[in-house]
Amino acid sequence: MSTRLSPREILDKLVSFPTVSSETNLPLIDWVESYLQSHGIAVHRHPHETDPAKAAVFAHVGPEIAGAVVLSGHTDVVPVEGQPWSSDPFEVVERDGKLFGRGTCDMKGFDALAIWAMVEGHYANLARPLQLALSYDEEIGCTGAAPLIESMAAKFPKGSAVIVGEPSMMGAVTGHKGGAGFRVHVRGFEVHSSLMHTGVNAIMYGAKLIEWANDMNAANRAQEPNPVAATFEPPWTTVHVGTISGGTAHNITALDCHFGLDFRFVPGDDSAEWLARARAKAAEIEGEMQAVVPDTHIEMRETFAVPALMPEEAGEAETLVRQLTGDNTPRVVSYGTEGGHFQSAGYSTVICGPGDIAQAHQPDEYLTVAQFEAGQRFMEKLLTSCS
Image (cartoon, rainbow, N blue to C red; front, side, top):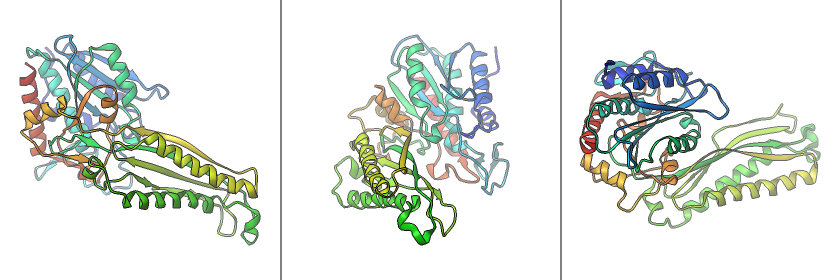
């Protein structure tokens, strides 16, 4: 019989793989696949459609029937470059009751507990199956979730309740905002700035689209939120520009301007309508540009789309988590997760995982030992409920 590792031993191993989203995650996937298979667990991987350096992995234990509890996590982490770490970010270091390391909180702590539960469940007399779903590229827009879910449906009986283990201090989170984004490229026409009326300044025309974002935020903020939106902070759909670059020199009209335009939608808002409104505003601005120089344009490339997670009426996943934790506090969050993809695919979905989201993406990211232990107790109760 293969060695059964503890949750901490699994966590140490997972953190040791530097699975920054821009890099490969295959060494981690290879290890998870090998470890689970060594215990006789049915495991499959789903390769990235275009990037051979990425893959997802999913597994099933228990009877081959529908209705499994799905433990959902992601394998990628955010970069560490430029952050003042006190220790090696890819080594778990314990001090002062905290487990430091990139991803300990977001979300390899949960991943380790889920892998541990899968092995323990394999050796238990489960009446209800468990499934594991570990994705790629969550940190760059949850782009790996939908193909993973589709691949799982083709290999295993469909699960019914999904627990997405993003850090929630082991409380049940039943809703989150959706998200979508564009990469905007404004192509102008260069002339000397003393003759700027004969050129097209890409930055200044791009600023018109950014100002539209400001106007939309002001209008949304002024509206009375509906009951679902009112539970969020802030209780409206937001439009955001976080990066911008362009221009050649201070005395030349800018040839190019690049920026990101991102939306976070409250559940119930029509994301397609918002994206169409942004494209319509860009087309209006593009018309102004082309009236000066025809060979100018605005390109808007959609980069990600994350469905909102809607609170469910008597949801199966929420009910299960509340039974296991004893937590009855209503919670929603403004960040996005892969939960919206699972819910859109017909799964009852809830977020519950160890750690505080405030630690995610930070230098010296950590998960407290107490939260990790609370996560293990949760998994033990889950295994009992499935037995």
